[in-house]
View (cartoon, rainbow, N blue to C red):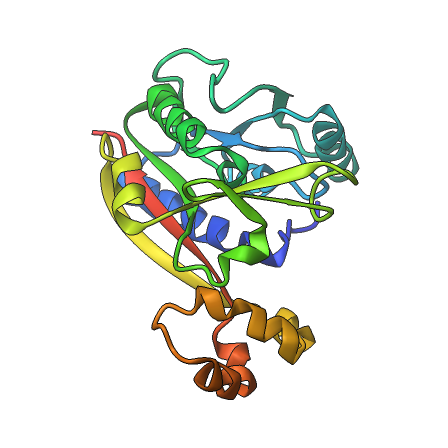
Length: 249
């Protein structure tokens, strides 16, 4: 079987794999560890990487279509994963089932209230001392209007991007205090804020589009000052995600 190589947006998952394998090595354990992926569907399932490193992989997803794509990948590469329909807001497993649990770019499409439910559920199904990995969109992201219309505080809806045509897609954003509150039941092993500059979107942005963003300028600059910043827009338009490596006490 060839080495599994995940998509570039899954780089943080490699970091989680590194953390949990290093911990297992330090503890001298050799028995296979179980891991749950909340949002496990897709053409290149990250769980395949954990399987290749000796973990027993379990995954849930709300989309049968995405699970079918993951199953096809597993068949083509000789990988055995335990995949099933399931919602991370009500994970279909008993308390303390897994050694590790994670999500990657799944919770960002939940409302803030549902995000809190999902984090609580991940905590519930994890064994004591187990490690978890999750992330949320930071409200340092700018401009937030790229993610659509804010219908509730921190909840933005847009169409024609990730969902089917005519359907709206939700993205929830959290400030630092809100993000910390989400994981207050956990021990924070580390917290990382990753900034990705959207240079392609910036380069495609015309001056009139830039000027329409003046209302989102955070320093209250004048229209003339804002116009002058157009040339430096590639360093202003950014997507920011906060990642947590967590331990269940």
